[in-house]
Image (tube, rainbow over all chains, first blue to last red; front, side):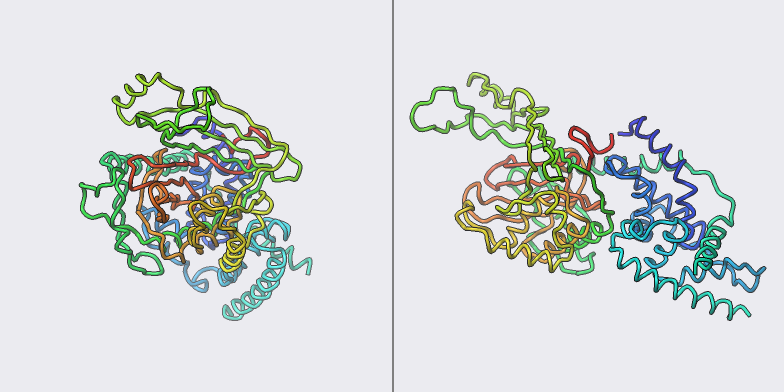
Length: 165
Length: 370
């Protein structure tokens, strides 16, 4: 069932894709453990359908799985996986102050798709058209949701900063 | 504003990379990937044992799991055995109700990313009983259908490349890997006594078309481009299909124009193997979920040994027209694995079409990766 050439092509793709998509997965899930879990799950699914991905760009396909994939849905099917979530991060005020902790929390306060738009636009530096393709929506929706996401992000950041004082 | 955005990009980079990078666990991913594939093969093998005893249904969970919570219909718990008799082994099998299966497929389909390419490719294996014999060459008066004195099944594979662009050529390659299976050695002996007539095409044929090939909804033709533009919402798709249904002339149907459920069902067996968007696929499953006559037969294996959920619809009529049509859907990907037609009057299926591969490619004779 597993074909050496196919496995080699897949392995080469994973090597090349890992760092870049890991960063996206961390930003989407807000956490390294969950990010890695999401990325690994998507990569396992990608292996299963490596042939079916066909003539499409596997990076784009993986990105679409990352932003559209519902982790809990997948986890439900993998019964060997513990259901407990990784422990939440400690209260930011109890440790040294980390400015990116505010951003992490602000990002997590966004709805999933808005978060994906922010990450794809500003981290992956994708065009609005490419973001629309990844999310399977129109450019208009991306523009709209992006505007809302940025407004929300600013408010959330301000609130976090005020709360931290 | 520009500065703002640059600041955000910088902050995101810091956030994403604040912990040291780990290397990609390639061997582990390969192992898990292979296991994911193998698990499915193993489930198939178990289901295969049940198939050997002629029962088509394999026990799956209890009903009412889906969001609808509809109890499984009583009919759903009576599988149609391959030989027309009730299955003798195992306790009464229960199936997930069809509505739950279809709604789950709709959800899965909606999550699948949209893909594209220049050609839609399918590879399908068709298996059918031998119903008539090739004519002996002498044309004398009315063609007479000779009764076939033995029982055999012929299978062959067809590949198709459906061009998306206007003016681009399409191609099919038919009659590949022909295979004749006799129901018993007795049947094979009868065939020999009958003069061992050829039952399958001798060699594959490549057919080039300087036009786009069509998919069908009833008797309406749809090009690849038109299929991709079908509505992506359930209501939109339903009203579109109702309009097409109303336009169908009863004289184009044998033995009779089906009801709307039958129409949607027949369209689904073609469209689900076609290049429709994830939204349309999802809408189609939702529309099917609303049709009350569709039953779930639970988990089955197709001819390739892949597992999927079988859904069935009885078609009205007499003789072979009183068939049961089945769709086998991969519950992992919401892809159509196979469709079949069975008659309670016959032991062998009337038709089995198994989709071995499908997807986008960029040129004729190309196949989806590997």
